Image (cartoon, rainbow, N blue to C red; front, side):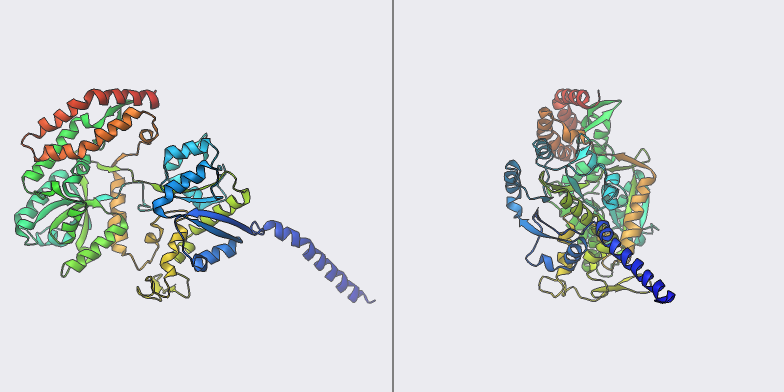
Length: 521
């Protein structure tokens, strides 16, 4: 045998040996080598769900299949409780209508399996944990037994999306050079509303409403938070709980709202409004300013509806007023962070939990967000040289009878892990205007952030076992809305408001003392 042949043979043996040795190593390196099957308990699903491209891709990538234990919304609570009490929940739970008291009770009864202490293997999920405060409220002895489904209606910060939208076209007509997001002091704001009434830029006559609110007078108490952020709750002052309605800023708020009402800056009969009556007036072109819930999606729809209803209206004719309160700050509250959760039954296999968490983490990558927003890249959509998304289908194609309806349906799979909103902020999303998302919504949130008086959610008040508090909240706090209306339209707002406060002051002080003892001592 020649030396050259012997050398070649030895080389081949070494290569084969290394290749064979690598086979088990490769298998060990693949965390999804074992095929898994399990059941998911949910209200989201469809007969053809397993044909949706995103679902198929997930099952192939992570080597699993799953059945759906589908429950109708109207029987969800009853079905969930029955399965929880009998320890019969499927391994994976895509939960809705999460009730914290029940959650804590079921954790104590070992209904759920704790999530891993270390979530670093799932960086997108860990980012949510680090960003949103609600996760701390679901920890029991330091552990999470459910993962709240985050509502992503404001990815900029944790501020509520209630803001003042205004007609820029009317402002220009009256000679104002307002920016898309215009900061005004309260006095400037009041002067602007008075000018609107005097000049009537829309030629509305008696139909003109300078300032409207989503639900009309039913939201006057919400407007009062521009003066007293805790008018409808309990506040912490100098290390003690106090009933917020007793603060003198409450009466000041009512007096200011009454001034606007008496001057005709608010719709005179709006105290009888049904829900969204004020918003409907604004969309019909009757109002100059609307105070309402204007998350990015709602803001976009508002601009489009105005363009449909008002001849010549462009989206740039919609603006936002950042209202400085008398103390020079922006009064903002914390956004409602979550609704529902996903969780795992106590008998869930470790490998199933790990696989499902990996799927959820993957779904939060931008590539997957693009997939459920637009469909399959290269088939349903592409990006042009400027990074803009180009869709290869029409609205009819993604309707319930269209050939690409799966694009609309795939969001149900994403909702197993997180609620709405992620696709809104994708760069180049043709469904959303850069003007609306960036120039209005994001700029407003960043302006608030520059000098915010931030009223964070007090989760103590949702965790207390004090039944007197819940009774007080139901019978008294929930009546603040009606008392504000009565005070504003009365001849003596101070008498109406002070009578209400005095009637419940003793009970409010007692509950405040109990809350202080429970949470602050």
